[in-house]
Image 1 (cartoon, rainbow, N blue to C red):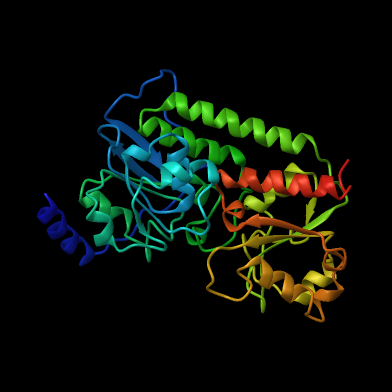
Image 2: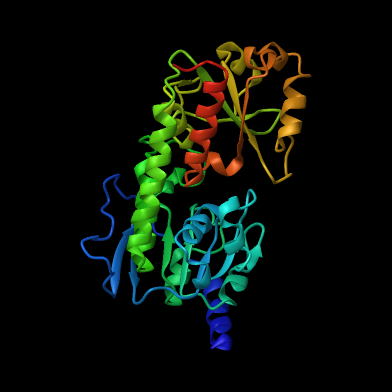
Amino acid sequence: MRTSWRHLAALTVGSALLVSACSASPDEPAPEQASESSAYPMTVENCGHTVTIDAPPQRAVSLNQGSTEILLSLGLADRMVGTATWTDPVRDNLAADNAKVPRLADNKPSFEVVLDTEPDFVSASFGGTLGPGGVADRSQFDQLGVPSYLSPTDCQGKTDESVNADGARTEPLRIDTVYQEIRELAAIFDVRDRGEQFVTELQQRFDAASREVEASGVSLAYWFADTNTPYMAGCCGSSGIITNSVGAGNIFADTTNEWPQVSWESVLDRDPTALVLADLSRRSIDGDALDSKIAFLESNPVTQRLTAVRDKRYIVVNGADLNPSIRTIDGVEKTAAALKQWGLAN
């Protein structure tokens, strides 16, 4: 078996094909949920790609942290043979189960490393991981009979060119799309009840956090990374969900790009009430870590003049909290709590 996998992998790597475009509509239906058990073979239309599942996966590989945390939350650690592409520590409540699953790489693993696990299912959060320039194109997994799944958060409401490219969204991301991903993965693995229970839990957390806060008149800026030309969130990704949930405004709500690079002068011109700072575990560019962000803000002659810096109104989140995932709700809770503590919300 392993020899044949490697032989097929070599042939596939040598003839890389283009990935199917992600062009699903916002109301792309989730798998039928009328019964508690899934019927196989199951066909799922996923990001413009038809996926056929012959049986509940038993040897799954998740290629991004967001996808991994969904599978772990569904209690599927015993059916996972590998994870990869981590930006932050795993959520505390998932740490014990995560420790049971081999980590193939902190970043993107090679196609061969993934195939060495003999997977029967591969999932990912981003088209840049499961697609051209990533671990492999979906068609390469198709050739080997391995079903693949891409998060609808990275294709719905996006142009083909924008998938995982920090490009423009044609429609704002909705938290319901995260719930759709959970339900679809739960159906694929035949754990629909667990999926519904988890969605209900997330909905209750989201509603509780957003109910507590109405921060009209408060403006936020979301700084992900880079001190020279910072990546600041535009209107319509996970930051949009967070901003809208607390009734605040985003100073860059006039751009549909998810993470445009801007100048500090433009940030000062719009002068946010508070700054949402991503504390990234990676250390690849200046401004990844929280302490380096704050040190820069409080020493740079432009950023020193920001109201949020003078008042030290920093809302600290993980990098993963600003990705479309179950962590988005963590971001909602942290932002709501900070605004409430500062007396900035009704």
